[in-house]
Amino acid sequence: MKKGFVQKKRHPLGSPPGTLMHLGRQRSGPVTIRITSWDKEQAEHLQDACIADAAQHLEDPRTSWITITGVHDPSLVKEVGEAAGIHPLFLEDIMNTMIRPKIEILEDQVLIIMKSAAYEPELREVVMEQVSIILGPTYVITFLEQPTDIFDPVFVRINSSSSQIRSRGADFLAYALADVLVDRFYTVLDAMEDDAEALETAITEDPQQQHSRLIHRMRSQLIMLRKTVWPIREILRSIQHIDESLVRRESQIFYADVYDHVIQIMDHIDTLRDVISGLSDMYMGSISNRMNAVMKVLTIIATIFIPLTFIAGVYGMNFEVMPELSWRWGYAAVLAVMAVTAGGMVIFFKRKRWL
Image (cartoon, rainbow, N blue to C red; front, side, top):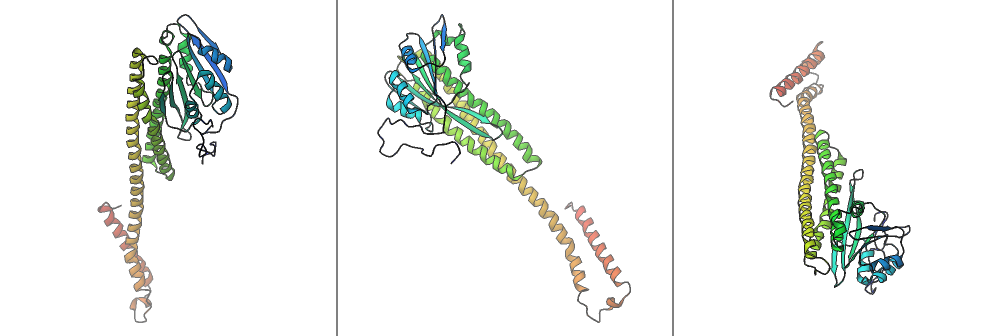
C-alpha cells in the first residue's frame, strides 16, 4: 500500500447508506470555506467564511460559488450538507476520494465528481485529486481535497465585468470548472509525450535496465488515465439531458464542446499507449541486438581458438616418437603456425564482413 493512504478503503460491512467517512489519501489541516457571489454589475469575495455565511449565500438571488477545501472532516462536511440541503448519499460520495468520476442527478441538485490531474516528471507519475461539484439553481459548491490554484483562471474571469460567467448562471460556472479540469489532462499528456520522446532517444543511444521500468510505469499511468477519463464522457453526455431548470439549453452547447475535448483526450491516450508499446518493442530489440553483437564476438573468438586448441592438443600428447618434440625450433614453429592460422581466419572473417 502506498504511503499516504488510509488503511480502510471502503465502509465497514453493514454501514447504513449515507455514512460519512473519509476514504483515500490521508489529509490534515483546517477545512476552509471561500465564497464568491456576483451579478452583472459586481463580484464579491469572502475568504475564511463559515457555515452560516455559506447558508446565507445559498439564499442569495445572485450566483454564488462556495469552495470547501478539505473533505477529511466528516462533521464539517455534514454541516455544509445540511445547510445546502445536499443528499446524504452525495456527501458519502464526496468524502470517498477513491471513486471513479460520476454524476448523480436530483430534481434540484446535480453531483459531478471529477479528477484534477497533474504530472510529476521526476517520478513520472500522474497525481489525481478529486473535485466534487454540486450544481444548484443559483449556486455551485465545490469540494477540494487540499488547497490548489487550478481554478484561479476562473476567479480571474469572474472579476472581469466582460466575462461570460458574470452574465450567465451557475450552470455556466459548472461548465467552466469542468473545462478547466479536462484541459489539465492535455497538460499531463503533453508532459508524458515529452518524456516518451526523451526515453526513445535514450533507448536508441544506450538501452539500460531502468528504461524497462520507466516504460512499465508510463504504461500503467496511461491505463489509470484512461480509466479516469472514460467516465467523464458519460458525465458530459448525461449533463446534456438534464432538465433546463438546472442546465439551460444555451449552456448545454458548452458542455458538448468539453465532451469533444474528452474524445480528443481519449484518442491522445490511445496514441500515446501505442507509442509506449513501440518503445517496449524498441527496448527489447535494442537489448536483443546488443546480445547478438556480444554473441557474435564470442562466437568468432571461439571459432578462432578451435584450430589453435586442436594444434595445442596434438602436441600436448607427449608421445616419445613424435619427431617435433626433439626438434630445436619445434616450439617456435608451432607458435608460428598458430599465429598464421589465427591471422588467416581473422582476414577471412573480415572479407566476409563478419567482423
